[in-house]
Amino acid sequence: MRFAEKIDDEDLRQLYFYWLSKKTNRFPPPRAAIEPGEIRFLLSSLFIIEVDHEEQRFRYRLAGSDVEAMVQAKLHGRWLDEALRSPLREFFDEGFCIAAFDRKVHYRKNTLHLAGRPYIRYSRVLLPLSNTGERIDHLLGCIKLDGQIHTHNPSIVEEHEITIGDVETFERDAYEMPAEGVQFGGGRMDFGK
Image 1: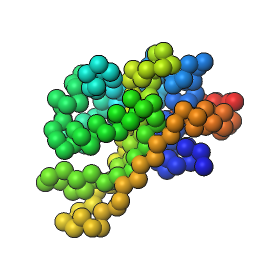
Image 2: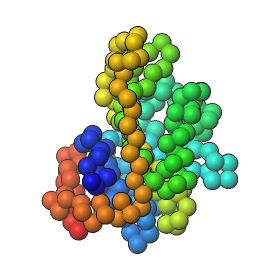
Image 3: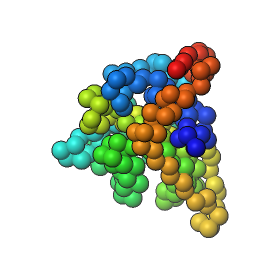
Image 4: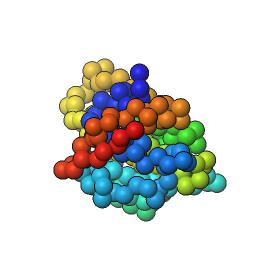
C-alpha cells in the first residue's frame, strides 16, 4: 500500500502530494520550495518547524491559529521546549525527532487529552525539508482536528495509529501521483508524472 493511501484526511493527503510535487534532484525538497500562499486553505492548521541538530531542538517558524488554539500557547518564533509544558512537549517532540533525525514522513491519528479539557481527536502529518538533500533543516506539518470526545472514561477513547514512511516510499508515491492533479482550495495543481 502506498503511503498516501494510509492518510485518510483529504487535506493532509493533498498537503503530502503538494510536498511531493516540490521534489527536485535533491530529496526531500528544500524549505524554499514551500510557498504557504499556494496552500492557503490549510494555513490555520499548518506549521513549519526549524530543526537545530546541535541542540536537538525545534523552533516554530510558522504556526497557524488552529495549532496554537489546540495547544493553548503562542508558538511562532518559540522553541518547542519553551512553548509547551510536559507531557504535551514530549507528545510532540517524539514525532518531530522521527521526522527530523530519521528522515521519515510521520503521520499520526490520535486522541489527545489535556487536563480539564475534552479528549481531542486529531490527525497530523510531518514532512521533512532539506536544503542539501541530506540533513533535515525544517519540518512542514499540518494538524487537523476531527472533533472532541466528552467522557471521563478513557477506555472508550480510540487507540492511536502511527504510520511512518521512508525515502523509498516517498519516491514511489512521487512517481505515482494522480496525473489529473489534486485540488488545492479554489485552484488545481497539475502534478503530472
